Image (cartoon, rainbow, N blue to C red; front, side, top):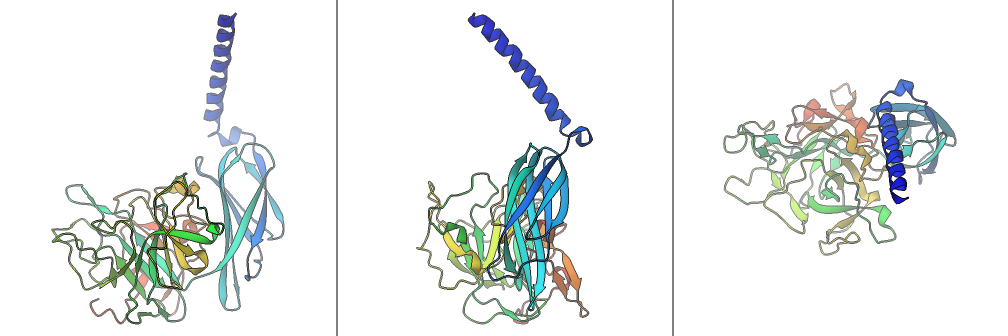
Length: 403
């Protein structure tokens, strides 16, 4: 009797596997599948921001490279039809100009499976003002040497004045956020107000010794090492010469690391310093902000079940943030809240000597560019080959006398 049951079980299992495999193969045949629908609604959490006129809804199935886009009223719902079964990221965005400010609206839901008809999905949408200072270009992936070894000393981060008025970067902090790499195992925090913060693994800060004004259309370059990386003893294949950078994260570890003309940033928080400030070549998450009080490296918090030390940064203090990922499929492993970045940027590989740079929204009569800043890096940034500092005619500030 037991043998009969076992044989029956194996037969059913084989039939199930065969059916499942057939169904899996058929999912790529979109035209042959019965499409589903999904009902999208929103919850607005706008604070003092005005209500947008309409919202743009985008549903993306990254596995199948399938995308649907429509619009909806902020107080209504929308039915998305022609949905093929699968796992989706739903992103809702908008923009509104009022009272001299540009407001960005964003929200997302990731890793949502749609396998039944009329799936109900609610997305919380927040609002923020476009920042005056933005990440203009980030080169994180590194390059290859003539001997095909990896080289990462040439990383840089460009901050641009995208506004119409002078900005002062005195005391500006650049934070690498936790976790460094896209992961499904996101940290969990015990504090009741945890969602009001992002968490820094390391923080470097512009010195507070003097004013560092930045006119509209000017940018600062923060280099891991502000040197000419094309030199023979560094990497002749490097795409960048960073000798004119305004700031560097200087860590003296060997004879080839020189204290260059760039201003040395202040190491405000780095629990376990190593032999250079290397951010992951797979794509880290970065934020710039002005601390409202001195950064105290002893005031740390740790995720539940982890010894990783972090500094809490209030989301309301963040001027700009960007999430970078290995490749576009990793967007489903979001680390930043949508209010700061509803998407992610990528160069699609490591040591490929490419950067991510903001797209140009408009060019003024004087040649100054205004860059996109919708708080959605998927839409705002594009991969660039090669990286270029002060792309699109950005100027260096007057106080940079070594440029």
